[in-house]
Image (cartoon, rainbow, N blue to C red):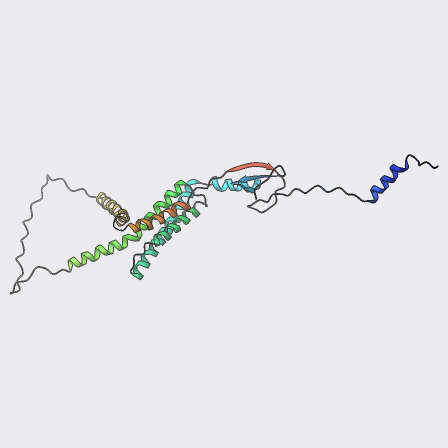
Length: 262
């Protein structure tokens, strides 16, 4: 009866385990987040801006774009861009009205969009409450400018018709009705205070004229309620486009510590 050596079985088992070539699974690779702005993988830490993943460099760029720069220069640029769009819109409306003969108020919606976009671009796509009111004022001014030439033309036509109306009936002998004699010119009163001269009357006249023209859309709305809807859409477009950007920034987060937004 033969007996096995006590060390044979463990050695044989160890050899068999090597023969089976069992390998352990490799550790899964960490998926790097991608910055939504520069589209580069982020190897270390990232931030979330409004739920979007950005790298540290792009985060600084976003903050500089939103909060950096001169506020006065930005306001002046937005005003010039918006004023240019308002002038173009008013001229476009006048051309369409003159060529077609129709008062197409729907152009006011297009003007609101044009002015709103121009102001928004002038702000560097920032927006904000101040720029919403600026876009609102410029859009309303464009609507005023759209209606002012037509109102002036109508007033001038009525005045021309009044001047062209026939005068008093002539008598058979051709003599007209006896004209009233002008009263004798009174001598100037040295004690009378002279009427005020200078730019003040002109300023008052311009003030009344501007107030009248800015009241035209309101008067039109009272007589044509559909104009209120059209103008309202145009003003709303200008207001909506310049809504302020609200940033919610979270982080920094280390890569691999948790889930991140795509």
